[in-house]
Length: 215
Ligand code: BG6
Ligand code: MG
Image (cartoon, rainbow, N blue to C red; front, side):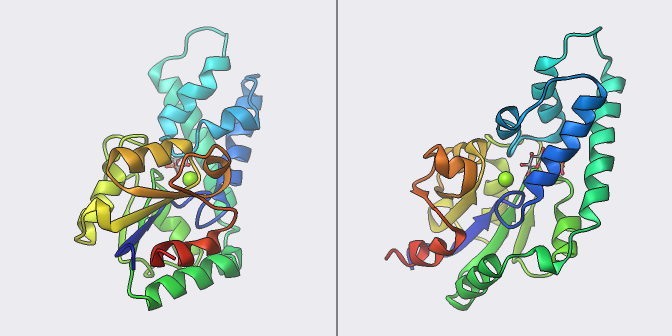
């Protein structure tokens, strides 16, 4: 095996909650008359909730907003987002993702999560993956979000391995940068793959089984 562990981003990698993030931010932005589209949304991938809000507010041209008001807007978005997460169920875990995870595990790899989201544990529970991963590093145990490598370094530490032994899987350019900054190889899907941000830019998640064997 080329790697001993795989550290997965969550939103946009394990599940399609990146779309729910987009829809929730869109509702918040519309309610404030702020222009927001999918291109801007791609810059929010991997970035913390409050930093995401600041990116959206680049398009806000009204009176200055207090810190309290900003927290209110982020809370409004999170409430809408959490509401949509209640619809998530194990049926939202694709067969390709589940089969690939099971194959990697059967090959003896440690499997971990490295996500900026504070909703990580709730989402894993909804998907039926509450106890599945060997380690979960998320928005609750970090002080700096991606592109800082902290969340991945903590995940590697939790599984007791050096970054060189772990492969990071990401859909965010900021996440790929975080992986590289931490000394990890990075395999990308989705937006980050299109941008060519990874050492491996995958067309589909299932390619991981070949990548980890070094084949
Ligand atoms: C990341 C998403 O996984 O989590 C970002 O890619 C999001 O878009 C971040 O802003 C924080 O998520 P949450 O659930 O804590 O608001
Ligand atoms: Mg992501």
